[in-house]
Length: 115
Image 1: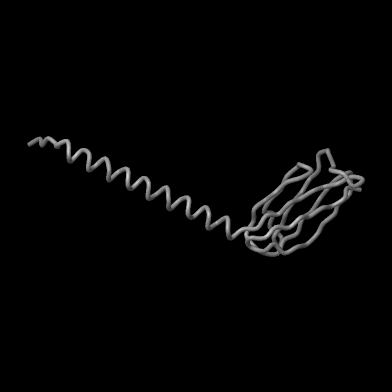
Image 2 (image 1 turned 90 degrees about the horizontal axis):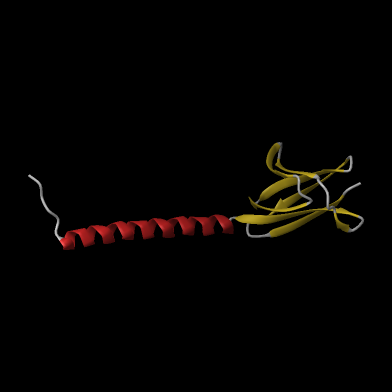
């Protein structure tokens, strides 16, 4: 037997579906904000003669022996969980590195000169 839904039932089901969609969106956005609060911002800058190294370089960010981020840009910003890291720069045939601790919610600038 086929039943016909009344207009009121259709509206109620539509509102229920809309409410679920809104709740899922709020939960997703809330978790993104919570994750952002648990990360810190790492700013990398490669320089030549006290100016930005406007050329291809190689940055590698490691946590222990694991590579967590890399880029070939002279500058970059990464958002990472708080912890101990090292930044490695290869530029003009030289290698430079620096160890650092990034705190959750903090910022750190790593500026390394190319050879």
